[in-house]
Image 1 (cartoon, helix red, strand yellow):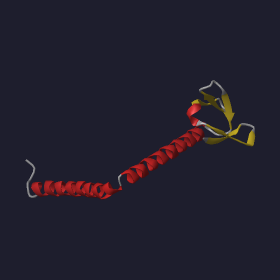
Image 2 (cartoon, one colour):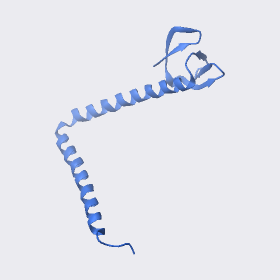
Image 3 (cartoon, rainbow, N blue to C red):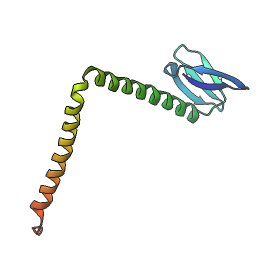
Image 4 (cartoon, rainbow, N blue to C red):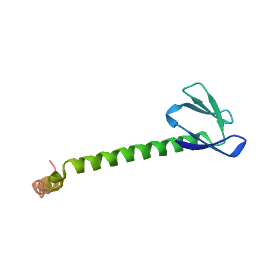
Length: 111
């Protein structure tokens, strides 16, 4: 949920499910149209509403990815060392390729 202020009621906070927002318009007041057809006039600018929605979605995705990571770690703790070795191997392999590429081209003038 995002927290907004009803226009004319700066002290009246309310929470809104950002998934219900269809449009946010400045007419010149900020009017939020919901999927239900309801319209809400808020004190925040459209840019501020968009920023709040982005922050909400970032939080939701970060929490979901964190839970997914923890579930994978709990489900297969014995694979942690294998994953680490694979990551290190890919890093070392990429470094070796870069070194080989540079060594192969050393001393050759462009044609």
